[in-house]
Image 1 (cartoon, rainbow, N blue to C red):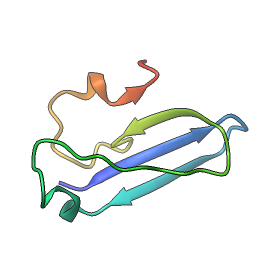
Image 2 (image 1 turned 60 degrees about the horizontal axis):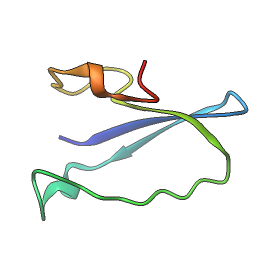
Image 3 (image 1 turned 180 degrees about the vertical axis):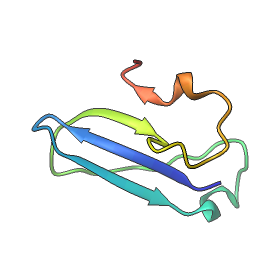
Image 4 (image 1 turned 90 degrees about the vertical axis):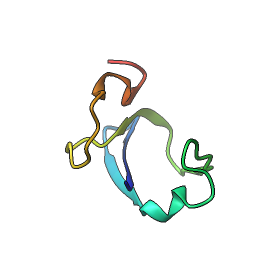
Length: 65
């Protein structure tokens, strides 16, 4: 599955970033990726539009909702 991330910034703007499924090709259990942003991040949410087959959506936000 691809990784879909919604970034919410302190200024109230949002950005959706899509990482292709190929990111899992080296390790199907865990992925590490560094993100560098120009704005201060207030919140991160995985799959905000519920496009993937995630059965546990309770762990998709930071900070936890």
